[in-house]
Length: 151
Image 1 (cartoon, one colour):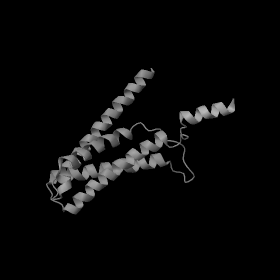
Image 2 (tube, helix red, strand yellow):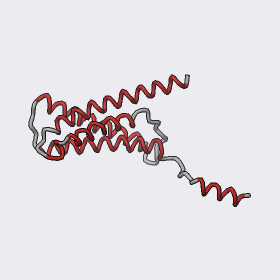
Image 3 (cartoon, helix red, strand yellow):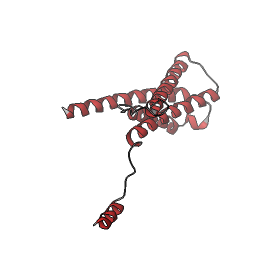
């Protein structure tokens, strides 16, 4: 039963990663038309696409913690903001491509920056959810020294 649960989580993450890759492809395609040297490179397109896949996969299956003093769970807030922002940017990119609009380079640069910002929020949410409330790890040397002192 536990294996089935892990397999379904893996399939979910792979599916969401593919959705992030597809959204990143639309953003890279629309931003690639900008007359800005760095955004026209294959490396910039690759970073945009891969960041989308990593962000969507990292944000999937997060366990939200308890609400803080403000009543908001920071993981939930980061994940929701990142997913919303990347989805809006992907939808905008598809619109730019379908309509055949030629927005100014400043708008396309803002589009790329917003995409990366949304992906960073998703990855930050995953990091906080997985490692935020854990106590700091001690090195083996400190633990052995403490054992010797205790004996």
